Image 1 (cartoon, rainbow, N blue to C red):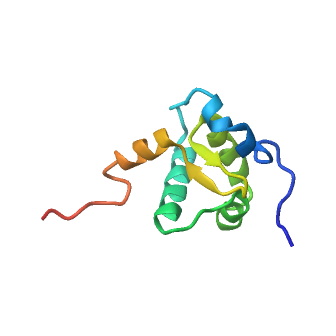
Image 2: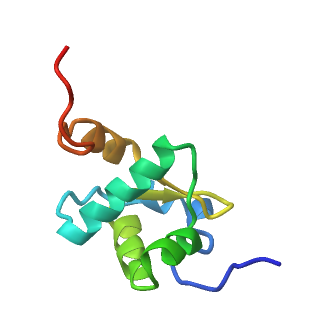
Length: 106
């Protein structure tokens, strides 16, 4: 049984390439930033979360945040509704040294 529910923005977003049609908006809220890092951590762990997965983990209130990040070009969604970071978002996340906490010095 599919857990898919009709939500504006996610259905057909991969076909439309929405994240690539819009100009990247670098102004994100603290809440949006936390979701970006949560998605990045899931991807590093080998998971490709869907909006349903994140709503289950973080609560239904994450859905508008996901939509906002999709609209701003931070997230990309594929045909299976799996979320990933856009190319620019991956670069922004990888440039943050404080994301995973302090790193040990060799």
